[in-house]
Length: 261
Image (cartoon, rainbow, N blue to C red):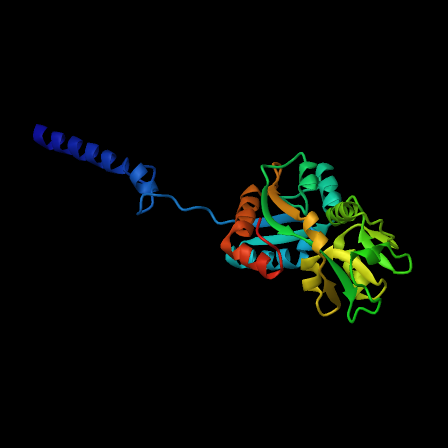
């Protein structure tokens, strides 16, 4: 009788010990390889980007979504100064890509930015150059119809720097709030010439011709990109910036005419 009772007690202890080795134990909770998997990205990544990045970033957004099926990338393209103001006023954004360090510096809600490309100015004229534009000096001719970016936006600041360096006082007929607006006026033939980036001329080569000028080297634009400290989707923001800086991102940007810093 005693031996039968002792055997039953030992069996009960063994059962309890086995039950304690269930799913809550470290061995059971770990993966076969001994490491946990990284959760997949999800949600929306909102990117505020300079107007001159429209074509290349739209492509990068599509490529990023393909690489991360659970993510949607949305863009707000505009002049960098306007974007910086919107961010500082509380507009929800995950990433900011500016066409100039000055506008990135204006944003208080940012992590350390990285310069990812550079760009230079080029004269854009309607196909066939009906206004007979030959160079930068034509921007001082009151008889020519000229479009430029306002000095508050990077393309306008770069143009102002070039004009001052070579001693030319331009006579623009319109000052636009982003470079795409200048390009549109040129493409529609509303002006004889506009000062845009070489990447813009390349993107609209079916509508405009480009005229390079040596003075463009006096104002090379650096483009910084940064995640924002109040990003609604911080993981997605970091991943998108990493993609822009990757070899795949560099390939798309290079094809658009941007240079590496």
